[in-house]
Amino acid sequence: MTAEQAAKQLRQMAASIKGPIRTGVSWACKAARTQAVKEYEGTSFGRNLLASRTGGAGAARGDNRGLRAQIRVSFVREVSPAIFEGGLWLTGLAAMMEKGGRTKQHLIFAKRARSVGGRAFTGLGFQLRDGRFFKGLSVRHPGGPVRGISAARQALERARPKMRGYIEAALQRNVEKLGLN
Image 1 (cartoon, rainbow, N blue to C red):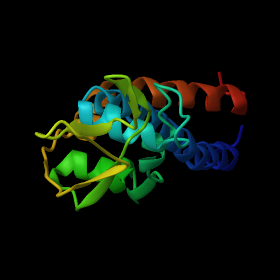
Image 2: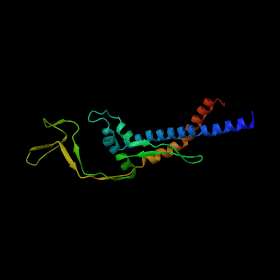
Image 3: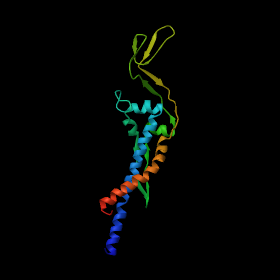
Image 4: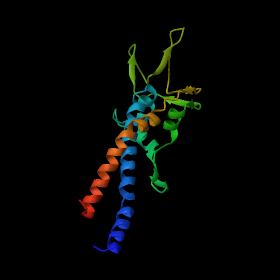
């Protein structure tokens, strides 16, 4: 092998190393997203509100497509030579849960009908002092504070040690693909 051929092969290997690094960082970010979704669902706010925004009224419990759609993996980019950046991009209510904030005024609708005292009602109801029963289809919620829990940041911190393994696995696949092992 001549010096020119060796230099060419080295340049080719250096150029092909960026892809596996991006892949490893992306895998770690996806693992962090999965962990963040689990942590958000562990809170009553995430379990009751975000998980229910998946497929409408008939969404199965534990179905978290709506929450996963609000936590996206950002594109891994090269900031400078040998420095890559990736992360999670939060939108909607997931961003509010991460940072904290306040919900706007909104209507709360009953999910399922039930029977109280032999009367079927939608789940939003109470008995008046004179004995009459009031049932409503919706209630106007005035909004309220949401405490920030920073689950995405913690999930990314926990994924950091795994990132090295993901990058090494992607690099090993690249070495095998190039036939350099």
